[in-house]
Length: 291
Ligand code: FE
Ligand code: FE
Ligand code: ZN
Image (cartoon, rainbow, N blue to C red; front, side):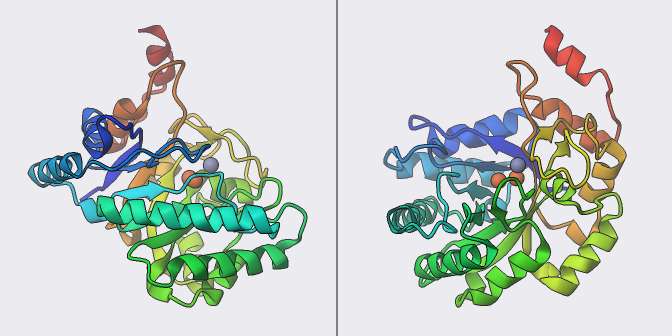
């Protein structure tokens, strides 16, 4: 069964129930969310009543909650050796892990970090050090996202992901989240995804992949830009994304759209419908802009 959803909001009043309802309104059967604003540290208290209501509703709707993922705030940067920032990142990531645990979330996607001029080797050492502090007895598995290689981002190729995983002591709590836009922008040919998966399997191991972000890209392969485009409107194209989404080797893995709003409107209901029908609607953006 296709497990498809998108990035949804999480607000302090409706919490997980609100996120679920938003996902359902798009016809999704999974979703990803931040537990608060990704760019600040303000976090409200988790209300267990709302979590339980959401869990009940997911059962009714046949949603497998064990595959719903949280995205860690992007202000976390474990690659930065600057002691205060590093300490802040570790502490905040630990708090996010606790929040995931309270919510019953198993998987959290994390950008490995940016080395900000320290160099890749130092960046990787810092990331490993930070992850080992966070993952000691973590109930949550952290999924390292493959990055586009913008600026000094670490995790821009499979070898860097592999080096980080090698340094992590608690191997049961580390995994990977692939992102189609990032892979393309990092220089991987996503039009032959079986070949890409073969390479990933050889370097890292396919069993580490627990989630895949499905995004088209505004830029060409190898551009190192990281600008997401709506499904079928970018350089990867609809047919190639469909091949990735329906790849048998990724069947049980949740697919999450992080495509941009069109004007003020979320495109997810229409994009999920196109994906289910395997039919591209080239007028989609025009239509969303009109009404
Ligand atoms: Fe991300
Ligand atoms: Fe992503
Ligand atoms: Zn991105």
